[in-house]
Amino acid sequence: MFRRARASVRRMPGAVRLITIAALLLVAAAANLVVRSEPTGRWLPLLLVGVIGGVVAGAPRRLWPLPAIWLVATLLVTTTGATVDRTALVVALVAGAVALAVAIAVDVVPFLRRRRGVRT
Image 1 (cartoon, rainbow, N blue to C red):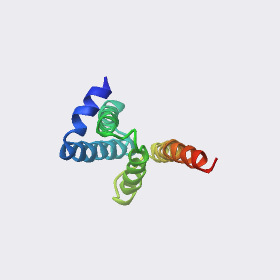
Image 2 (image 1 turned 45 degrees about the vertical axis):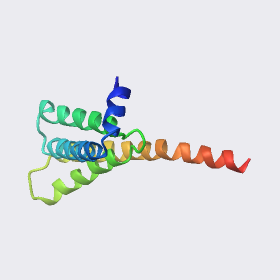
Image 3 (image 1 turned 90 degrees about the vertical axis):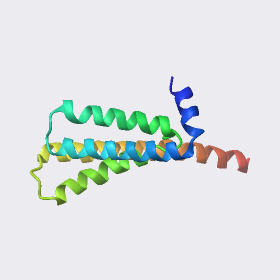
């Protein structure tokens, strides 16, 4: 399903950039709402649309920007002076850190496999 959509989006480099930026902004908005303890019905659709937009725009190449922007947005909310639910903040930070570690590992594995193949 995503293969055809991804192929059509990649034919237009400007569209890829716009969709990628929109995906990152949607993920950041979702992180903001999570930390402010908004109901799940408000932030979950933003997160889902952001992740799907990232996948369509080519995020499977590099996964780390989506969880990285989640962490940055979560930390930025704490500096605004807004009322923050501490439990939601800790959960969002831990989930973001785990997702970032997994995304970096997934991004690095193909690189390591290629290097091993060249050496042998």
